[in-house]
Length: 234
Image (cartoon, rainbow, N blue to C red; front, side):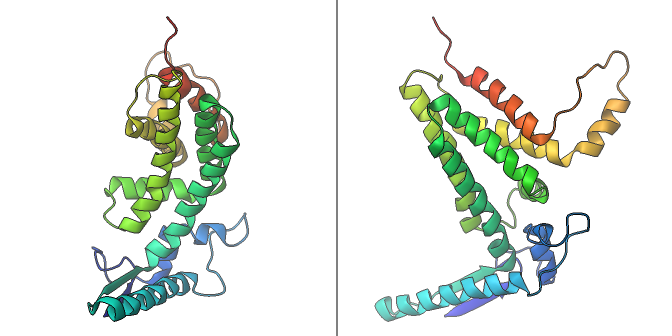
């Protein structure tokens, strides 16, 4: 049995970074410390502890498999993945709870979008983490993290399928709807400065209402998404 504990795991491109980078990239340090101060380190090396815990669990599972099959295993535990899974799991859990409480397909998709927005507003660094992963095409994202992220796509798919069956929504590609939602919310959180810079160079008539906060934007987005996917009445 081979057990590897690294910052980004065995499939990493970067291999010489320290654990604090993984904690920061995974969003853990952004939730520690005082609100008016920069992110800080926890009293313990939480990333090391999480990665070691997952590595230990993997090693025990590998030993059990060895006894049953006689075959060895490679246990790959990444510090970044261990930290990231906490946020991805919390996001999916919160969305599932909100969708379960909502009645009807329209309210469920609204609950999905508004809960996603509220989560990104609460954990402001998480939008940047997702944007980084998407820009890198998931180079540092493990299969386990991708599977956790897929839970949100599964929720959207279930809502759309139910709406189609009830003849409320038209036939739509769930991935396209997911990209419309996630990219809009992430871009709002990660492009504040560049939006102002770009807008300042617009020539001629450029009139907009006051820019909404993220949670207000989520409500606006929900209305537009519902209008876009709702089946037209004959």
